[in-house]
Length: 350
Ligand SMILES: Cc1cc2nc3c(=O)[nH]c(=O)nc-3n(C[C@H](O)[C@H](O)[C@H](O)COP(=O)(O)O)c2cc1C
Image (cartoon, rainbow, N blue to C red):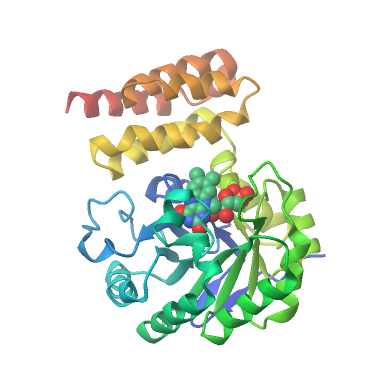
């Protein structure tokens, strides 16, 4: 049975209800653009943005903020640790053209927790209440929040927290179905999203290890969620949103032929166009870590790029890998791949 393909929060239409997850180092303009080429994403996202720094960031240069108008609708995720940070940060993202604002309440990274943000906030519900109340007053944009399940599985604690968020004016909640300490290798508790969904009247989005169309179907069935958020899958298989949009939501998203070398080349050129030279290589390496898993011996590709000292070197090593492991695709996309090489040579020459 097809799922409802439309979700509205305030004036924002999210269709299909497939959301890109915020991911530090990954969810930037170049990845978002690649996803748009295939289609099927209902709401794009930035990576988490330190609220404290936002008012002084240059959105034309900051790799976290650079974007094109095509990247829309786009949600900006705020990493807030104090209610005083809310007003200036919200004002900044209004200026940047945000279509929605998300509050990061789930990041388990020790550095983030130590600074008083991310998942540490779930242990301080009253502080979160005042942050959300401030944010609600400061914006009429859709205001969303993203959480994990908490420290231990406790339906009462979790649902009280989520009801508080709804009561303070959150318009949509994403639940990454893992406890704070659970690593990605642990099976997500999708059925726990169902417990939250039952208690709230705002849309609830399920997140965690949706890496295929089959996962999407299973997750929606287990969680009863109003939509899905996809993170690593966006970098493993950038066409995943399009596949789910077609097969789960019945949308008419034209399937594009998949050529991995050509896709990788498009991403690399996009990284070059969007970011300052010193910001490029790290982003190429981060994406390659995920993308490489499309190949049986992809770890060789990942290691080769990981140990490169320039974009051009990384690209030449990647091409060497593609020629050996995906010769037909390389031959079919020869013209495009040559153009990528020429672009990188020009860039390197300065
Ligand atoms: C490299 C990386 C960076 C991440 N950065 C963020 C972030 O900035 N904000 C956030 O809320 N979650 C972040 N996450 C968590 C993802 O948004 C998502 O909840 C998680 O990856 C599970 O979804 P997935 O299985 O579809 O990847 C990050 C995850 C990864 C892998």
